[in-house]
Image (cartoon, rainbow over all chains, first blue to last red; front, side, top):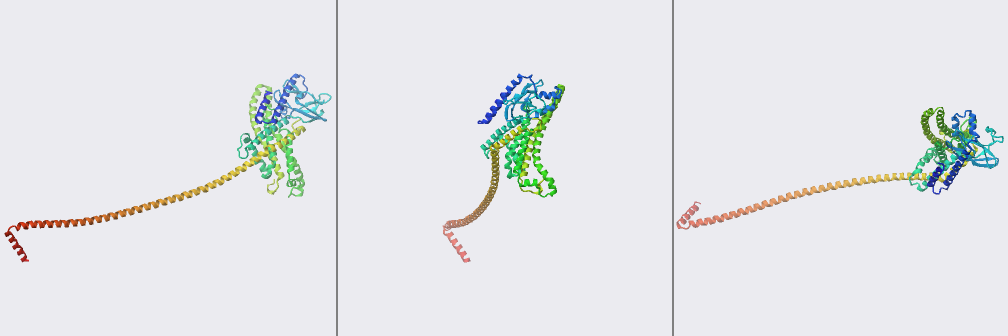
Length: 401
Length: 165
């Protein structure tokens, strides 16, 4: 199964692109990653008894080791991590890249793995990198191990700059590669078919969404004349968010929560902020710093609010996307937790609750499919509205709200 | 990472690089050509629609022209038919009249001829009767005058008759 997956992927990649050297690299990388994974598996099984850190610590904190903690399970799934957890004891390691006092240490996160405890939880140990610094995976945050031994308190650890390819970053890169493959092939079809040939296949599937972003989002918000300038960003953002949201909905694929990761939505929102600010014309800035037709006294109150709003707008974009996607994941996981929680008291209760929970989960999955699209749309639409606001030229008192 | 709401510098770093890279690449590789082709296609469709409209109008005008022609042709045909009928009727009437006249003339001729022939025949008959009568009279006279007595008697009778006159 481990070797089968990349082989299949590589084959598919070959059929998609004949000269896709990029794809071959990806296939090789996945081979290496999964190869590492198998080695790590051996490593881990070699010392299963030598348990050390996080997972155990959490259990110790909880007091009762037996008790299943749904909150913890949910947080584990929606939080970013240094490995991808598929199902059971199937983990995929990811590269850890840390910058610590001038040293760059790169190693696979499987170096931290230390077998599984009796509940099947992954255990962690410290790892001494080639630079001689010993690192620990402390609740999925890479820290330098303190000299006085294993301290549980995170505050006492020194934190290096963590540039690791985490689960979210990996998922994001995967989506980006997927986007490059999809849109390269679609674009090639457009170039080949020209304007006279009717769209077909993947091109036909993608085209409505491109037209949707152009005709329903960009043109009404920005205006026909200037919309073209923002189209590449809006299209990229739209498809990026949508595909990332969709990836997060695929079960047993590591439970990606890319658009629910604040760091990633922060980047998207920051780009919206930068584009808005740089494309803002005199009219836009004039309205912020010196709103016309308003008494001086009110201006004193209004200007700070307007200034704040230029930061608030992208911040809200960022939080809305993160919160929506995370909330969806939490709800679905809560149902899973419900089943597991009842299953702990008795198997019958577990199965009983399971039936209802599965129905609700299916319902939620459909809602989430909608939300995945909706959030991509909302983000794109609001970004387009901000751009439109920044580039608006002719001002009519009547239509300004 | 610690907690859901924290921001990781590394993730921000990778996300910035990756997103800007995909933005630039897709702008060059995909969005440009795709949007351009879509624009071209829309223009093409708009043109095609306009041309179709024009063609439709042309067709309509052609059709009305055709109808006009057809109408005219029909009227022409009707007129020709009517004329032909009129001429035919006239000719027939004339022919009839002429035939009647000819018939009448022939009849008159025939009657005249018959009359002439009849007259001639009557004349002939008269002549014949006269000559026959003369012959008979001759015979009778011959017969009567065969002896002198009878001849005398007759002469005396004739003289008597003449005397009476």
